[in-house]
Amino acid sequence: MIELEKYFNKVCFDDIKFSQDTNGFVRWGDRLIVNKEGEAFPKIDKSIEIAIIGVEEDRNAINNKGCSLSANKVREYFYQLYPQDDKIKIIDLGNLKQGNQVKDTYFALADVMKDLFERMILPIVIGGSNDVAIGAYKGYANIGQIINIFNLDARFDLISDTEPTTNENFLHEILCSEPNYLFDYTHAGYQTYFVDNNALKLLDNLRFERLRLGEIQSNLEAVEPMVRDADMVMIDMNCVRASDSPCSSSPHGLYGEQLCKIVNYAGMSDKLSSICFFENNPTKDVNDRSSQIIAHSLYYFIDGYLWRKNDFPYRDKENYYKFNVLIDNEDIVFYKSKKSDRWWVEVPCSSETRIKYLHHYLVPCTYQDYVCATNGEVPDRWLIAYKKMNL
Image (cartoon, rainbow, N blue to C red):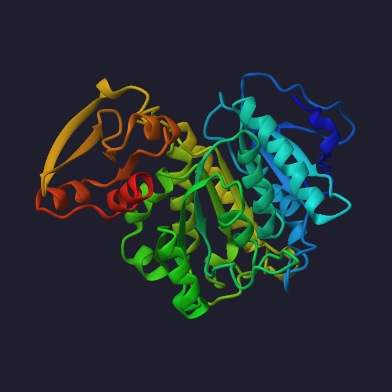
């Protein structure tokens, strides 16, 4: 374990304008365990389940200087919200100290993430520019865990693989780094007119999934299995339309309540172990609406977390209904949770591959995928995973 205290600046309640409720009501600012200015660094014991990390880093942000101010502004509104539960323990570690170089900030975040994973604590990262995701990803690499990433972003940050790394090309370092710990990557909410066809082809060639904004708008529930399959969720706030989130660069995008619903899905997933919010810029905001959306998203993430059912199938299969569907002499096995009614489909592979991809050979799906399979249609998500594991 590392000395977390050395990595963080303390939270000043005066800066985030938080004070006790005059009526004595308890809000998150009262309930959180906070690395607070003027007090000793809090003890981190096994009862803590979630940790909030602010990252004041925007040196690699092109055209979005000021997003480093996001964490404290989000705190200003999240601290005012009323808790859903009086049992869950959440710690706010404060803001990560900025490194001499941006890469030093990445490495510091990776060290902190690794430490939290080893303590079985789920990190919520509030950036900062979205290249900070490199540090979050390296946290998984530091523990040798192969992961799935779900990225909610209006654009593909793949414009160039040349130095220096910026918030507009950082995905190259995650998708193409060696050794690579990425099994699957899903890019959701992209707007086609912002995306080069070569970027689409690259994702297709890598057998990664993508979902346009219009597809989400027409069927929000289709996002749930993709989010449930993720270990790490990344959210660029430009995925939200500017009328809801004024710091957004696009007039089109998700509604604020749609973002909250997707984040709620993430909270409910037993597999998910971190979530990150990037590119919120208080200097471009109007009435702090963008920061308030993130604060509300945190509320819905915690709400989803409280509804976790511990029904990820590899743990306890007797609590599932099992359905076999034969398609072209291939036996496709579906599982339905008796706890949550959620569905998974099993990807056949060797025992060695199953051990290596313990978190990945059971792919989240929907009841509609099962219905399609009974009609002879192989689920797309099953086919993509099958090719990755067997070809």
